[in-house]
Image 1 (spheres, helix red, strand yellow):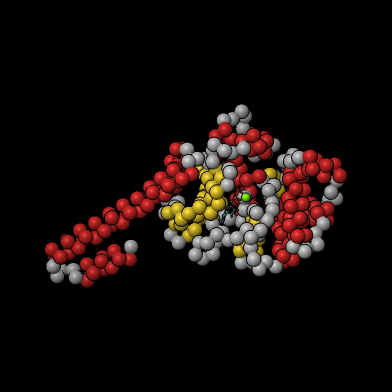
Image 2 (cartoon, helix red, strand yellow):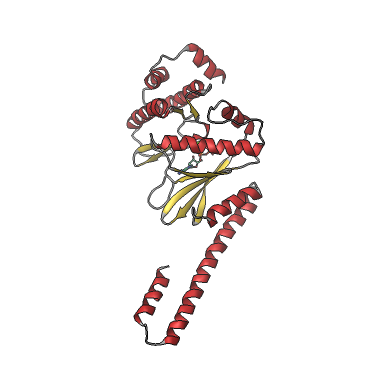
Length: 291
Ligand SMILES: Nc1ncnc2c1ncn2[C@@H]1O[C@H](COP(=O)(O)OP(=O)(O)O)[C@@H](O)[C@H]1O
Ligand SMILES: [Mg+2]
């Protein structure tokens, strides 16, 4: 782009000197522009082709939606796969020096029965009998809404948009676009400080955002600039949800187990009380165990 701008400037400087020169330079400029555009289109095509063959699980509709993101105003280029899981693939992408994460749910391998169970109890959704695809779309919508809600209260990737089975969000990364590590893999972590930060965040999430993460562990917390960043709110539920207590207990136990392994004193009953302001009742614990 700079090259073309330079050519453009030269044209202005030479104005009036030689018309033919100017015309041929303009032509060359247009040709370069066309070639540049073609290269980009080819690169995008190749990426999607690679996905199709290498992965073999993206249906045509998903590929079309990915195409739509590339051709629309949201993404210039996919950079690579960050994580490939059973139910979803996460890519990094770039648009004008800003980095994004694109989470794509695999329609064919999603556990839609579990998804259905979570969505059914959520007062924000009124799905009657639905197709697998509709359930997955509602699932992504739920993750998007949970993330948007969380964005206002705790460190979390900014939710940008959701389209069908695809969620677009901010990439948690360094300045060069290298994704931040998970708490599980991060080095040089001040665990004692981290535990305190997570305690406070969970209290804020529960009381102010009225949200339970639902799948909290060292796998779904990233470490950036010495602070926790929460991701993967797909299983998140509002506190009114019938499963919210069971999920909170599970989240807290996961967190305690992790920090205990790191030598931090952690008692899940005490943590439960700190977050909810209530004693943990044996019946709730029993329900959580059986869940
Ligand atoms: N916004 C993001 N920024 C950086 N890395 C991310 C982001 N979202 C996901 N990841 C990476 O992708 C992995 C999988 O994403 P996640 O949302 O946890 O999906 P799932 O666990 O359902 O496969 C994460 O563990 C993390 O390493
Ligand atoms: Mg995860």
